[in-house]
Length: 512
Image (tube, rainbow, N blue to C red; front, side, top):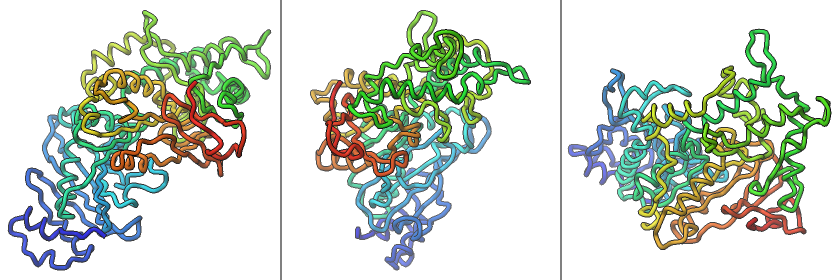
């Protein structure tokens, strides 16, 4: 057990604190003393400091806020945080990424890509935060304030990291040996932005399904939804009824067509598409030869399927957003976020979009010129990570191929551009890896996705032992007792031709 030296740290950081406050060296007493902790240069207010024994490993959970101010909109702002400080500290520190538009402080556990054993249970000190504003779900009102928007764009990560490192040093009497970041979606964007804008902040980063340019991805989804509106019959209120654009049988037909074309490309027909780069499904192959009938699609339907997975093009024919890959989760209604083709699902953020026309160029102009805040929030442009790579830091990207919000092809595109732009004399594989997760939806789930994998251990070993990760074993509820290797891009898992088809050992990583 790491010996806690909080008494010394408190005396150093809090002039006037009597030694009697920390005379009891028990973890409970040390945690209680943290309620009075103050840090130089931070206007930190500690709301609570509780010693927790019944939720994971014993730890001190300190919650509070800092950077208190009144915003330009007259509202009060502060960066809220929670930090979990385990009794048995490993010497490691992790900043946990956010989600959506943030606005809430999530439990500080560090569970992204941790394979069921989160960072806190490994002895990490873990900090979580709200990025500097309060708000539920998709509340964008914070964007009326400049600092709140800058904090959401990524600057809160730098501030919270500085605070977290100071808290760790104060609580344990020593600085963290290594610092990590792990996040998915908005947290994935924050991960990218940290490597781009603050290249010396972390030793290791995990960036999952990064929301790197939501202005473009949302635009693309709106365009696809409108295309489906055009072939949907009108409902009683005259709005397009997208539930009738495709019957359940039609949707099943499309999914079976995708599997027929692409499932066996990895050497095994197993309900998964492990080689999405080679998948060349053609929806036209499902068109009825003469009129609509069971077991085939109309040409209109086939065209909509093709458009849904194709790049969204501007008037000149250039891609305004990349294509989505054909995969097994595209018709899903079992996940919190419906599959890409399920614009009829009420949980789909496009559900209330009943427009019958869409101007891609106008949408792009509004996103790229009319919204300078969003351009700063986006993390898709800066590709030179030379300082990050040169200092020895490592980054692991992952992305579910069935993600219906952000195309995994966009992360592949960024990874390729980053690889070309970063000039260090090092091979990209010496500091960066990308893993595509077949069948996985947005950050997790997917009816045929194996969404449990431990990239955190791989990252730790890479950072601390210089052991570069190769394949990462994945499992999940979709296929109990099945494991598969996730391979570093551009490789994919290929069945060796013999051995247990449910065992990762029967597969190897190959290039196309």
